[in-house]
Image (cartoon, rainbow, N blue to C red; front, side, top):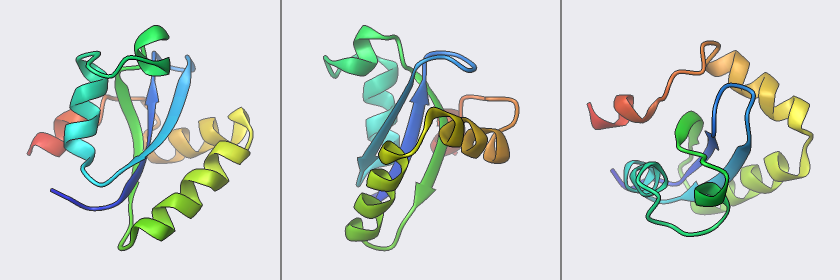
Length: 96
């Protein structure tokens, strides 16, 4: 499904976090899981999709990504805990 989204990928519960943006969340999450995109997420083992938000327009998603990236780690952890308190891998939900 193509729709603007902001997402957070983690290496483990309370581990390394990566915040990103995409127009195809299921494809992008798959790329992270399989290590197909060299860079930060591959280097730090970030494979768990722990949080995501869909948006109507890409400009809204970009603004939210900037807000999250500009925020503190504590704020990101609070967001994850509010949406996904057990830190389950949400990738499986996308495949349904």
